[in-house]
Image (cartoon, rainbow, N blue to C red):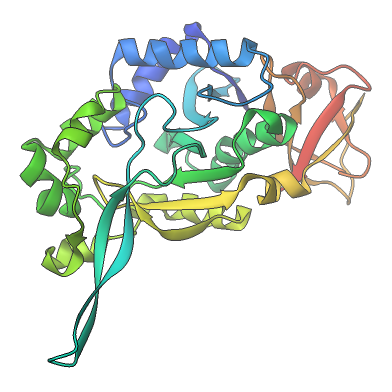
Length: 337
């Protein structure tokens, strides 16, 4: 059985393994021990903190295989972005060029460097070991953090975004980066991602072009990649769209991957999950049982997994209750999958 729980310092080695096998594709999961230590530290501090107004808190969770204790996935939530360091995106908008004398009126798509998402909450650092990559495990890894948000809504901004990795080849070369970013940074895509991941973000403001970039001047391959997720992120995109996320023509400044957004209180897990009490029994099967995401209502000891039960009369076996740190009659939060 796989279980979601908050990061602890004992997870550092497992987290390093995930960072290495991710191959430098994830900005928020660089193979850097100091950064990963800080990721854990921020999670522990954020969970202990009493929050009346969200700020720069960050929460990361691991997916642990209970049969051998191996860490097979990681996911995170930032309470709000751009508070202490700039958070850049490209907004894909149109620039109008007109000449009354020639009777020409052109609307040209262009990329505008912006910080429009500053202050938004962000789903981040979603990575699942390919040996465990199933639709069910992806649902558990991604939606568990939304269940955490549903239980603690005061800790997160009212707008929620998710950045999906953009198109890149097997060597992690991005056509968008090769066409645009490389001319300003003089480094490869993987290194730029790494530097951003370890919080060396100042160079972005120093080196990125601040004037609109006209899309027709980009290569055909780069234009085709605008707003397109990497093929292995399609399942994640579909999952987020089922939750109510939409693409609003904002893309990543490095690989042009799409940024999806939603009102935090409107996502499916926020509106359809319910809080109820649990009965601990045999967990015997019935025709009314369905797969549900179930979590306790804790913060530092948050636990979440997938189990079959009747949502109207939730009952779980004692061994499942032990994994979730639940006693008979405790509050839980559930949502059907």
